[in-house]
Amino acid sequence: MIYLDNSATTYPKPLKVRQAVASAMQNSANPGRGGYDLAMRSSEEIFRTRKTAADFFDFQKEENIIFTLNCTTALNIVLKGILKNGDHVIVSSLEHNAVMRPLQKLTENGISYSVANVFPCDNDKTVDSFRHAINAKTKMIICTHASNVWGTKLPIERISALAHEYGVLFTLDAAQSAGVVPISLTKDNNIDFLCTAGHKGLYGPMGTGLLIISGNTIPSTLIEGGTGSNSMSFEQPSDLPDRLESGTPNYSGIIGLRAGMDFVSSKKIRNISKHEFSLIKHLYRELSKIPKVKLYLPEPSEEYFVPILSFNINGMDSEAVSSALNKKGIAVRAGLQCSPLAHKSMGTLETGAVRISPSIMTGAYDIDHLISTIKKI
Image 1 (tube, one colour):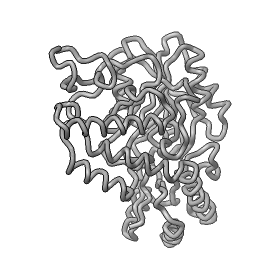
Image 2: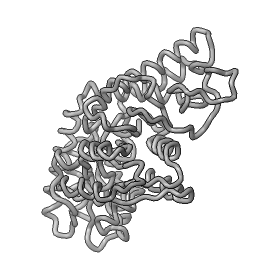
Image 3: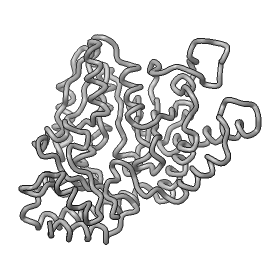
Image 4: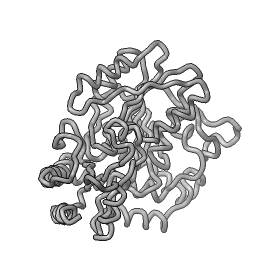
């Protein structure tokens, strides 16, 4: 199988990730729930992963690294733990349903939102769109770092600075950028909350995610329960990370996530990005030569995109193209990719699109085989 659905989850996982997960399942106890050696060692391994995540994102407070099940959980914690009746939120026109569905639910509680248009390859117009959407009740700007459909990268340094200029919180959905685009919470200190998946560009197992609380605002709890600390009290602990981590953690997943981040660090983000972009640019150039293939944006560049490319074949449903590719052993994602806003912005809400997303594991042969198969289709 030629796997080109890495925006959903990277595959295959690096050997060291698989080994780390297997070892964790064989050599662990419930971390923070016992004073015996195995439980203590498990707690130490969890802390080591917090330290790795802090270093990866150039951040100084390991205790503010919160482990979640996925990026969606992290986003829900922020949205539902911060917003109150009467608050206003700004999102981009490229948001995933991981943002839009929680926000839509929160409208039942008196929370409103506006959609700021993203103008691909025109950061000035994009920032102006966010600026014009701010009003007296705006509490938060939350936006994707890069579209999971079109690969369009938002100027988050400018948008986060704009948010703080107006006293507004800024939340970054880094599900499609972490591991491909360098993110420094020290250099860009206007990011209050960073939410990301562990199983995509960080090459960790599914069922892992991160919430990094960089600002001074702490969300209310989404769930409460045992934390292994302050057990005498029925009140949820106030200190991080315990405040937002209740119940037994996904220990093997968290250890696998650390191995994934170590893998990315060893390969270096700039090298991963360079490799993936070389494949996507080659694909774009070859697809642009095929008369029936419809491309929607300019050739992806590192300044304005992450290495994702979506297209359609005239006269064919995107799901039909995906099915035809699958029969030839090529795995891609078609349809709406859980991002109807992104498709609405491009006029593909009815047709969807075929998405290609490589990884460091993808070879030039894989892309050439894809190209030749599309030509036959």
